[in-house]
Image 1 (spheres, rainbow, N blue to C red):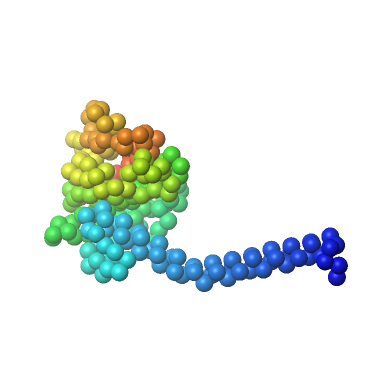
Image 2: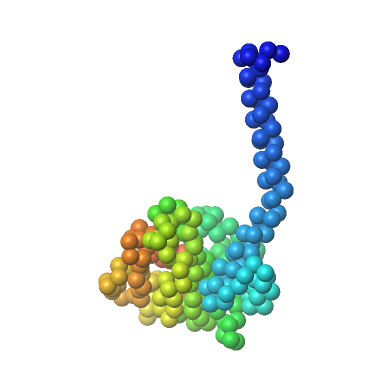
Amino acid sequence: MNTQSNLYTVIYAALLVIFVAAALAFTNQVLKDTQKKNEEIDKKIQILRCVNVVATAKDVEAKYDELVQETFLVNKDGDKVEGDAFKTDVAKAFAGGTALPVFVTKIDGQVKYIVAMRGTGLWGPLWGYLALNDDKNTVFGADFSHAGETPGLGAEITLPFFGRQFVGKEIFKNGEFKSIAIVKPGKTAEGQDYVDGISGGTITSQGVDKMIYNSLNNYVEFLKSK
């Protein structure tokens, strides 16, 4: 075949595309199980982090199994429903108004309820976990993550100092759901508990504020139940 012809170029390009596509598909299939396992490990690390337990990829499985006593799903009416809490796609659950996960842990003999959160920041999705004491009102711990917030600004929601601000805050006031507000440093929020947002990360902070309110609002009936 004439290597200078247009036909040769078309055939060569087509074969190259097919080869690359096949190689990528093979690699994706080979790594699929590993990627899934890494995602599960990361999720368990985040869940434990919100109850102030530091875990690594090596010891997270053992710590998670030791501390997480129970998991279940709850609907908007606060009722438990069938399903796998850990494997639930939280983003789809919030978007579709379906059942959401609850993780029950015991820390120093005290029950903590962990609920999931999902929202949107400046550049992409935000997510996290909030741990409540057995009164289902007072925050024990919080952990936040993001897909692409600005380093040094909005991305600082992942740092321990931000999550520590939530400890001891209440999401209900006089039996009424209020959430926890994120305010500009130096500002306050009337009638509800609040924490300082990230300086220079206004949109991310607003995203976290909405995420907490919208996420917890889906758990209100469960949290009000005793």
